[in-house]
Length: 109
Image (cartoon, rainbow, N blue to C red; front, side, top):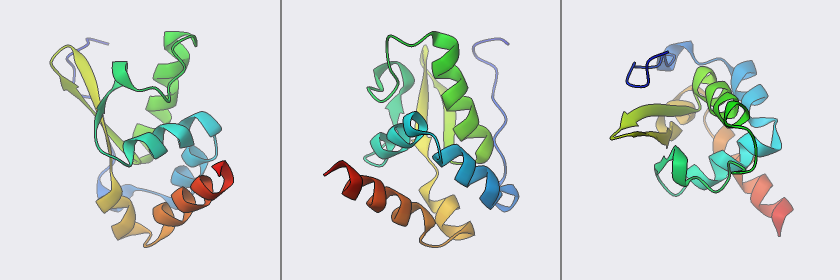
């Protein structure tokens, strides 16, 4: 795949609950979503993605979230910019994302 190629993202109406729940079921992916809660990040600067993990593993984590419709991954300069699709998730499944993120925050305290 060419680095500047636009990656496919599901349309809002095509986001499925089972895909979102699966994407959020992994600790590393959930940590990434928690970090994106504050706003977009360049993938290279995302501390939730273990820098010691192989690049293929980090890319896979982002791919699962992107294909589920949880995040948008767009080319921004030489990096990929990751953005949480909060509005789309909230429109499809009101309260789901906030509930999951609040629960995760409570578990970390």
